[in-house]
Length: 535
Image: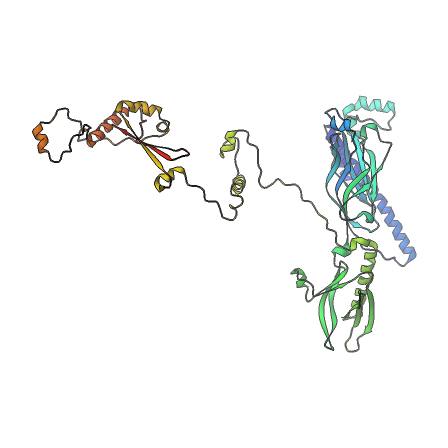
């Protein structure tokens, strides 16, 4: 009742057509649950009266779980409608209502149009406390999006008064959207195969044109049934197995568990928690014969004999209980287990797994499209911040997964390393520049324009810079100078460095860009080294 009141409030607060449709879906589901609860209460009261009058209660099978998933309803549009669907095409809101007894679930609302070939509902719906003779009813409801809400079963005069008093939008919110039952089907234990199967739909013909959909006439889903006798321990406790080894009789105390059509025997309950394989497995089915041998004269207790016929000789297992009460408990559990198998039929042959889908999560590594080349290249750009997971993801792709195990490919050394290794041929080009061309070379060289040179230190303050003497020494002094180098037509090394220092001091005030003394130029062939010397 509270959920229905909340659905009413949500319906009044809705402003869009889709919101009104969704709120109306919740309201329809709440009303269906209230009716189911009332009918369930009346049915239980009748059953109690019948049991009191009969006196002896009938044997009741164990309950279980039923899960339905992968719900899909194919559509059968005409070619002209499917391939020529545009914005003005018919749009219908649909959802599915599933119920077993008083348990009712609904799916999310899906908007169907001619571009869709199937109506798919995601998620798994699990029904608990289900009897083996269950009936799962699936109902498909639809409502056209373009349909205007009308006052159903309301006199015209009263409808005019309501519209004039509250307004058309308020009346539509209060009434909500009117869903129509489009089709339905009923599934039972026979259809619970644990795999995707197709089932027939019963399509109603009295549906309004705006809510109509071209159904193919089938419903595809995966129906799974899990009896409690297959997933829960129906009986457990210690039993002493009577064994005969080389003609000698001995007893072995075992912890026995009755579950999933067999008795699993362990030496201790701790082995179950440690997931140790049982030391003995005894099948329990409709072919198993159960006998009570009577009291043991040597020791107090009663013997229980379990016989399973085989292809040749039958297999017999004898257990001794401590008290007759324990024997009676095991007998009741064994007979109940066999009865449960007869009622749940093929679902007791093998456990059907119920896959509970977790909510959708974004992937660990998100690959986003860069809005520009700059954002793609720059990690710390304002438009795109590359997270740590993105860096790791890119690193894994670059190294083909070797980054995760610590094995990366050896990257090739840079080309300039071959200058020192001598592994590639090298060509040295010598260029001699005059001081007058220095400024032009510094302005045209792209390498010097991108580098900041460190100027040479000035001469000591107590000494003047060296200046090349202009006067020519006499011939006698030249002959007496043994340490002087013979003239070759070029200035001495000291004169060269002095000229460079003076030039640097002069150009410091105007520009700080100078021609480099050396430059490396690389290409795909040999390494070329341009050596430029200032004179």
